[in-house]
Image 1 (cartoon, rainbow, N blue to C red):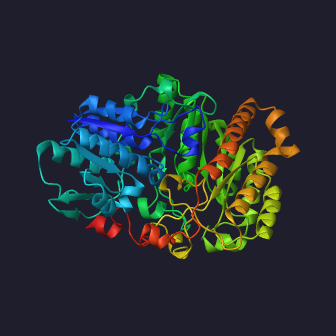
Image 2: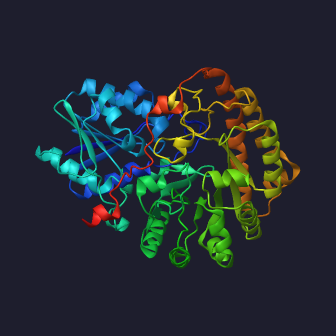
Length: 500
């Protein structure tokens, strides 16, 4: 079967501002098993340019695929673009199968099929095995009702099969790296790069995160095989930067140490960046030198808040003491720390922002990533804000970098003012500037300067965006805008159903 994977151009700031682009890991993860099944698979990446939608549609039509598979890592804000591209493709090719997967379509499958009749089928949850079975059925003209993890239209009725079981062995499906030209993808200021996934899911119950619902449980790749794959990417394709897509790759200290030891044994010059929890860094204080030898340079720590009450509210399972200690340990061992700080969890006032700024200064992270709380209906947090008012109704801007919820005590312009002020103070204080421009470690200096350059471009873009993209005064409630919460729904089958 002639299958085309399509990565649409994403409107988010993180996609448009940097000159670097990373490969679409989710689509490549689907592509590898389909190639191994004998299908003719290719990829069009619309992020480059970015490619205008008419040009992207023309390229898809010219490829004459039998099936077009859409998906995007930024699935909520990327959905309107996918909807527009897929509708145009279906209009030009009425017989083509439009297949759509990812987090957003998993939880909005019925609404999408009702609103977009051109979509053939939606793959819910993990896609590797489900896509294999789906493509085999479409190629043979067989019914889809026996394949778990699908939502599709059967005549005039929307049907939903049971959730697919979680993939037990993540090494059973390979990433289709041959679908990309590695020379086109970079990160960290022009260094050849890829996105990888050592593990899936997270065992922690943070209420704003949908990892537990989508992945159901934490699983990991074989540490030694994974290390060998990274080494091969470096030796055969010149990859220098490995960006981990994992929410929490360090859950098991034993497993994680096995990976570090295996990668050190490969003796490859890699730069590793990714996210983890502050308490895992504190737990691993004794093996942080191994992190360094393996190539780790920066960790993004999801602090989310510096307020203990808010951390309890969102069930972060962390403490402010642990967060500060993690940042201290990272600096002591020669790593960069990037702290995420989210505004809007509660109805903040000026004094709350002032207190948060003081606490962030006490934490003293190397870099700061400011975000706006963005509720998704598959998270438990969604139900705590169902009655709050939506002030941004353009779903393309639900990307964590735009304020989408009204705050009772502060107008949006003052929230933006605090947002940008905190960024400037954290990144432009003398201590931070010394780390950027007088750092003796060339890797850290390169990383800090690159991030600073990106920040200089993002900062005015966000200001212009605030004035350009209108906010609504009396918008709908969150529940009216998105529908009922889905925190109790799992994308994949539970263990009990899997065992059955």
